[in-house]
Length: 354
Image (cartoon, rainbow, N blue to C red; front, top):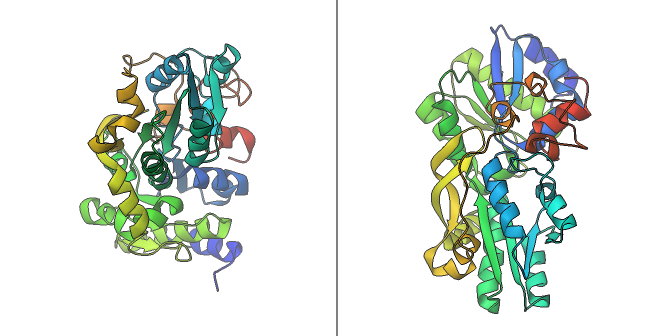
């Protein structure tokens, strides 16, 4: 039987440790930690940081600017998950929601297959799906592309903004002054990658890592396991989320991804360009690649007062941003971390016990 929250907190407080900084790299963890008030329950020497685990949050402003330009193309339907609709580009207030008010055909989808249905129902229009996410959503996007090829839907394409976790974590640890002693690894991504997807952390960096579920007791147990590894000086990958994550992950999902995508360089908010960190469509599926189909060009780095890049790399708490809670709120966001349902700023704004 899993220990209670009270037992876990007592065990955490009993560990003789100096100041320790742990980072979660999953937006669902970020929101669960805030909702349960876990930060306020931990001893003062244990600090939880939010990393680049929200796919909307890691999308740079200049990429959003390019999306906004594409949305205004004639005879084009842009389909996306809901969070992307409200994310502003480099100009505050300029979002897909605003472009829709100006006449762009922007639609919210709950899955890539919804976008396929839209393409089938609108043969005279081009339908572009914004494929946002990490390894969790990549298999579904891949399945949609492969299905479009099988069904001969030539008016359907995907702009792949999909990113992979390992290169981002390696880039984080290469940053000057990066100060984290352990990672709370994302449970959803781990269902695809498995335990093996995070073994590089202890093997290459001596970094403790624990894959966690999403209930408060899951997170507290994962935090305890991380602190225990640090106290023992024995870094490894532990799987707290055994009810969903296998050592090898999901081979079928990995195979579908490999059939559709190939690794490529990609831009990350706060981390810049990272080699092999994105998933681009394979050459044989180029007909379904929206970037190639429409000659998408990403403008130069955008100037913005948003400090989301520093928040998601552990360099700043959301309240450290001068815009937080005043100029930037969920109703009128300046940056994606305040828009996304998994964003660190939205979590800190919604729950006051940080």
